[in-house]
Amino acid sequence: MKKAILFILISSISILAQGQSTNCSGLKSGVFRSDTNGQRIIERKAGKEIFTFSDYDLKLEFDIEWLNNCSYKRKLSRILKNPNNEEVHYSHKWTIVKLIDGDDSGYIERLHNEAFNITVDLKWTKEN
Image 1 (tube, rainbow, N blue to C red):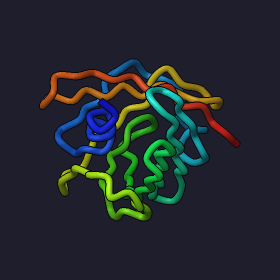
Image 2: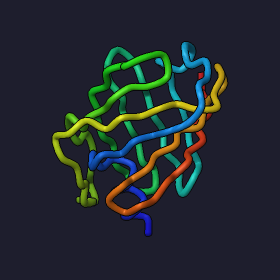
Image 3: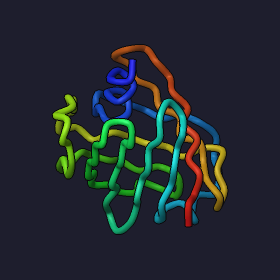
């Protein structure tokens, strides 16, 4: 189950996040934590996201490009740390992400994976 969730989060198989509009200006950089199905940390700044998956001792770097105030696209650029040789499934396609129900303290990210017909909501809390 953990590997399926990890695959959903980092896969670039046409994931589309949908939701309502919110103010995201304070969310374009910073450190964010999610404890949904295991602890994850995102460090977002200057066109990059560093994902740390504590349960797997896994760290990934993504290139990001903001499309508008609350939407951006991301693509895995490299694996920074993977001492347990976890399978990381991705392609070279961009993943579209939309931040919903957010403010300067955090946000909810809704991801829909069409390949698995699964929708996942992740709550992220701003750490700094």
